[in-house]
Image (cartoon, rainbow over all chains, first blue to last red; front, side):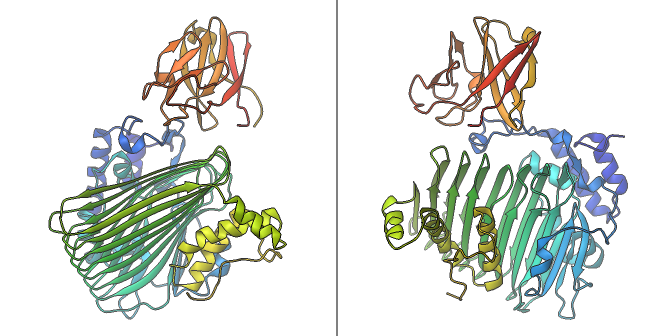
Amino acid sequence: MSKTGFSKSTFQSVLKYYQGPSWFEEIRKQAWDSCCAQSFPSQNDEEWRRTDIRAWDPESFIPAALLENQKSDRNIDLDATSDTADYGGVLITVDGTPYSQKPEHPLTTDGIFFGTLDQALSDIPDRIQSYLSAQALKLNHDRFSAMHTAFLNGGTVLHVPKGVQLEVPLYDICALASEHIADCSHLLVILEEDASATLLHKVVSTNKTLPGMHIGAVDLILKEGSKLNYIELQNWGDEVWNFSRQQALLQNNATLQWTTACLGSYVSKANQEIALEGSGAVAEMNGIMFANNRQHLSYHTKQHHMAPHTQSDLLYAGALNDHSRSVWRGMIRVEPDAQKTNAYQRNDNLLLSEEARADSIPGLEIEADDVRCTHGATAGKIDADQIFYAMCRGMSESEANLMVIEGFFGRVYDRVTSPSIRHQLNQAVADKLGIESGSEHPSFISESTS
Amino acid sequence: MSEYHKVTTLSELPIGGKKLIQLQGRAIAVFNVDGEFFAIDDVCTHDGGPLVEGDLEGCEIECPRHGARFDVRTGQARSMPAFENVATHLVKVEGNDLLVQLSNT
């Protein structure tokens, strides 16, 4: 029986291998029906006008849900394992299979759960069932969402009980190590009232040349008064197709800082939505996009203000080299009851080559009459005067260019409060810039807390 | 890499014909203009429209989105709203097969 593709027969195989609760199996089946009822988007759909996926062939990939469980002593070369000392917990999944987990038991004495989706379905189903059944999976959003749910191969769950403050950040890694794998994993974070946590979620290919695919979803649920710092570091290989739907729901007085670093993949198409459902909720969305060669990075963000006295602030900085392309479509939507909303969005783009292109499209849909909503979008090359000035001070042209690029991203780094996470972001961008660690090239990003 | 790949057969590309092919993750449009064959990126440089879905008149293809026209022989943008040329690729014929080599651009 063929193991590739997303056909009825591969779906039947997924159901046969699956060993979770029956209510979750029902969700899968509904998702499969939804998948069959929808077609893939075409270039005539507004969201896909500027993202060409005609060369994408889903039938050539193996759903990770069909892979036999790999042995846990598999020797995977993951650089990440060397810098995990600063984290309170580390969870690593490779090709959809759990690889390593510290601490070993997902449930702590404080009642915090940090483990795989399968462990959560087994150990704490009551805490997550309502989210997985209702909000979290949004079956009918589009065919990608339906495929994600039907072929779900696991994921990570973080649940922090009421009033618990997690001081030390947690680290979750989802890796692709084999070729032609389609990973459909889910990240679910639930912070109960007045809880707080910091989570770094890294998605990475162990080998940059491996073809692969990811249809992922992220759900961040922040109850009243909770606070979450969430950082995603996307560093897939150069041949990976990446589709992701990400959303955050904030209740009264919840606070979210959401930082995205998008460095990898061949084509990335991500929808990121923040719904400020409760009064006093505050959200900050930060993004770094750095593309080269023929990469195409497409991010559609939405700041949805549904209640009064809510704030959101989005800053996405993109640098584009070679023939790469970025698309940023930002929407701020304010509902009629969301008076005293204060919302801001800004996308800045640095074009490092003649052929690079950035499409930057902010938007506002405002239905309340006492709000403050502003947006800005810029695109330009490195200022030649700045380079001249730096070279007059003894720098080479390439050193001067690198300093400007690091400074360009520095405004986003400065918003990240965790030093270890800021270091990871800095290092990932430096790797892409071709700066070797330990080289004499100075890093111009301050490591001290701002 | 820099080598020729078979993308279609001549019988599928009569005179005045056009076809979309996928090569190494890229969408490429191939054309038959009076018995000569040409290949360009199937992405309008104005707004990313699929050129192959437009009308081919002589040696010019018109983007279906906003009407930009390109000379498929050279990639030259011939009308607004496009002003940037589209990338062209090398083409050769072997028997009944059409082969394309992607250019480095």
